[in-house]
Amino acid sequence: MGGSDSKFDEQELEDYQELTYFTKKEILHVHKRFTQLAPDLVEVDKNATLPQDKIMMLPELRVNPFKDRICKVFSSSGDGSMSFEDFLDMMSVFSDNAPKNVKVEYAFRIYDFDEDDMISSNDLKEVIDRLTGEQRLGEEDMQQLIDNIFSEVDLDGDENLSYAEFEHVMSKAPDFTNSFRIRL
Image (cartoon, rainbow, N blue to C red; front, side):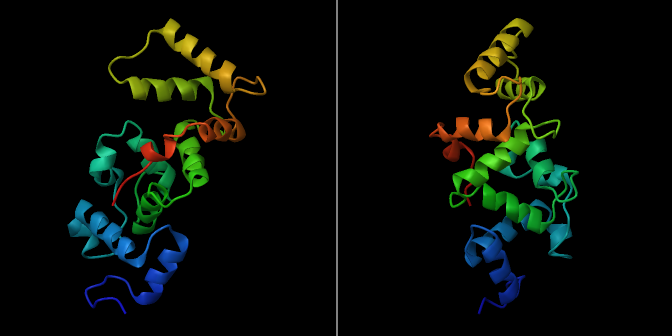
């Protein structure tokens, strides 16, 4: 049995273990990290929902240009706030043990800013703007880059990337899983 200081009983830990890519010990560590974001809230209620601004204080998210999208995609309420289970899901998907296909699915959802199940030229523009930061591309360079991306990966020529097209591209990106992770 787990130590008496555990916030979860054995059944809860087993359930979480079954639903994530974590061991029981790792789940407890994830909860510790969740608690550190807002000890005043979590100490009172282990299932407290933390507002997005608290979640984005996680060091690995603080520097991520997609932190707001990550929070929104993993938030069960859709507003960026997270319960422990939402946070555990996020940490699980970003863990080294999560399979590439799961990571690709969440990356697609994060980059699909308008949430229409396609990555459009507007979505790509937003991705590029966030990645380039203050060195934003001019309108002409931006359009050229988007056109080049679509000419390479938009297999059906509809000016959108479907999930299947996105998945195909990501299957050829060997460094993707290394960049799509948060270490415990």
